[in-house]
Image 1: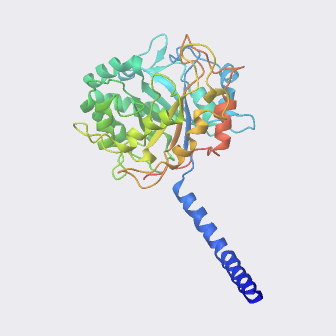
Image 2 (image 1 turned 60 degrees about the vertical axis):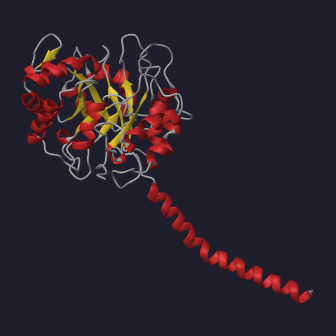
Image 3 (image 1 turned 45 degrees about the vertical axis):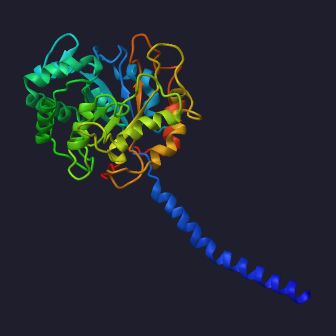
Amino acid sequence: MTIKKTGISVLSICAMLLLLFVHVPFTKAAAGTMNATTTPISVYGAWQCSNDACTWGTVRSVAEFDSKNHWLIDRGDGVPSVNLVVLSFVQPLKLLNKTTDAQTSQGVPIGMTSDIVNYFTSHHVRVMLSIGGITYASDWDQALATNPTQLGLNAAAVAQQLGVGIEIDYENASSPNLTGLQAFIDAYRSQEPYDATGNNPAARLTIDLAAGDRWLIPLATKATTDWLTTTRPVLDYANAMVPSKQPSSATSAEANWQEHIDGKTQYSPPIPPLAPAKLTGSLYISNTQGGSLPPECLQFSGSLTNTTGGYVQSVAPNGAGTTNGMLGYMFWAAECPSTRGTCTIPPNTCAGGVGVGGKTYAIPVPMLPLRQS
């Protein structure tokens, strides 16, 4: 008995010593694997409307603008809530014609001034202008049918003048003019070549796609096939826009984004997979129909920004790209995107939702160079 007990004790001691010996390297290896499969969020931005929905039809003082939007540049600790704002929207036909009227100067809404751009960039928040939107889909059609090359040149000139990037928001679901859009992109890139470093703000050129791959299908097919590849990138990335209403769960939101990553091989022609590193996902922070603002604006804990975070940082490529994780989030939309809706202005700012999320995810401000694969 004594010998048996002693033998067991010796074996137990040996086993414990062995576990102690392997514990440190095993833990480090496990941690390394976990780190390798998740990627920090790079893009954390908001579409920015004005106080007249998304018209930007009046010139605003910086002081007045700040009184409504200060939460974007200060989440409460002096750090911006976001690292990108996209001023929405520029009417494409007016941009082509360099229209000057009561609400427009040389094709750009008069409210999109260098003062407003500098308000953000002075706090290291990147700025872009969105051309289009659902309201201006027919204007995109007309501009692309008229002179898409000149439209691209005009867009590049505005980007250079203001020190901003450009977002393509062309929401023709049935018969988009993809030949014209290709000419627009070619003209833009002739002035502002693709810049993987991100150092040149005007070289940033992105596109909006549907929440998943079941709407804007021709656009998604063309963009994913020709403009968003990791081997021959033309556009920097795509935003999966918000659906018709806020997803009811993280699973629902993630299912939309997964469609882009998987592609739709059953379609004819097929939509190829999109690298997660070329995609952001979008959530509502305003209420376009009125009523209370969503948790994604007011309270990070339990919001979709919170519950989808693991997926956004870890989703694996499925046929395109080599690194895990989407680029990040876009939020629709800051200030007053609808004349009927509830605005993200004091006392109902989004510092508690978007701002806390930015701090939780350690969003880089300014934005760092984006992953390319």
